[in-house]
Length: 144
Image (tube, rainbow, N blue to C red):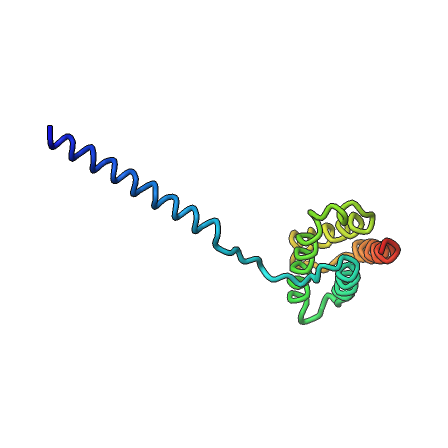
């Protein structure tokens, strides 16, 4: 009888201890800071859009026999990811014509770079990208 009572008390104490430990772990996990990856975006939509347009137009004009074409491709993909990640979920921005036009151009460029990494941008795609990027730049200037 005494053994059962000791065993029951030990189990009760163990359960309290585990509950406290789990509570402390959850508390520590919820108050610990989360670190976001650094972004090249400033947070000013108009300035960021114009900057991205200029950078990507320069990337489009990079000759196919350039020695740094792989670096330009990687930098462009990183910039596209930063831009879309920053503004895709912003309600005031993602409904504008400038953003949807930018998103169309960026998706086309990123899609080509990811699917055809060793191939240069075709002339038709270059023309389309330049047209859409210029249009987005004009729109964002008009909207702001």
